[in-house]
Amino acid sequence: MEFSVTKSALLNELSTTQGVVERKTTIPILSNLLVEAKGSQLTITATDLELSIRTSCECKIKKEGAGTIPAKKLLELVRLLPEGDIKVKLLENHWVEIVSDKKKYKLVGMAKIPAPIIENLIRKTKFAISMEESRYTLNGGLLILKPDTLAMVATDGHRLALAETDHKLTGLNGEVKVLIPKKAMDEVEKLSSAAGSDAHIEFAKDESHLFFQVGHRLLISRILTGQFPNYEAVLPRDNNKSVVIERAELSDAVRRVSQLADQRSHAVKLAVSNEGIEISASSPEYGEAKETIEKEFKGEPIAIGFNSSYMLDFLGAAADGPISIELKDEQSAGQMRPLADESYRYRYIIMPMRI
Image (cartoon, rainbow, N blue to C red; front, side):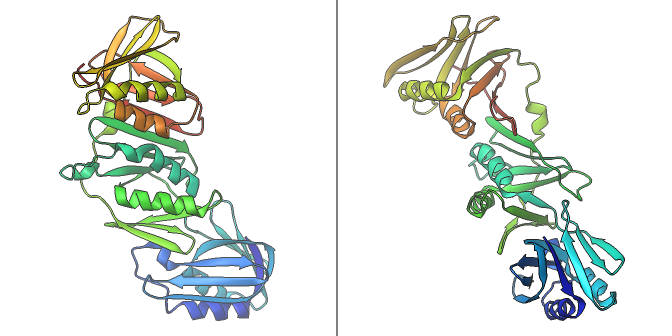
């Protein structure tokens, strides 16, 4: 976004919005103005959630776009500038550059997360959230924001899904962790999906609430309280027996074999040897099923039981292509990783079952 506007026109519209802008808010985004440049119009929007105002004026636009600017600082600065044209430019890092005559200023904007990233992180993890209300700290996903990475993790104690991707979050110096309830994750996923691939989500938080803004839509959710488990402690480090298999091939085999699995435990057995991977299940009610997929495997044979529903949840969210199944022994958690999607580091940890 890049435009020029006369001081008098901009000051007039900024003054109009000041009664609505929330000054004492704990919600950072409400003390910002949404500034949109399109055609030959500059549109400025302010809201305090109860009341909104939208105003506009003529301007010369070099590059169409939109951004958020701290309302109070912008008004104070514009008031002090000399008469004449003011040039406004949205920079790469969400900062806003303001130039008047030979004077140049930069204001900090709100950091934004690309909508497809947050949508992907949620889709890859939310199925692992616990449905047991008594375990309320597991009834949501943990969003982890770092200056260079975004990650989300969810677990129900039997399995854990962790997805991480590289993305620069300007203005963030340390690590921010927030527990998002599953219902809020569902809604953010819907908002992100509807917003399109070029859209951004503006994210903010206070002590007890989370705020997700997509365009003119603002979602407010409570933060889940309590201590999320130390998920890093359960990530396998020495699962040195691995076999690689195509996602579709594995998914189809597990889906077929699980038809004859015990309907309470959904247990299937994976036996890995130099002959390949044998997937089997049996139950007194239905009988037994067995399929062998020829794959290269070097090492001691190993047989382990997993919940087939848990496996299919992950395989449904993983990218098409090869999946690495990494095991240690019959009693230790297994790990599955898709190898085709290089933009996300995606790990799925699944506890073994007795078979």
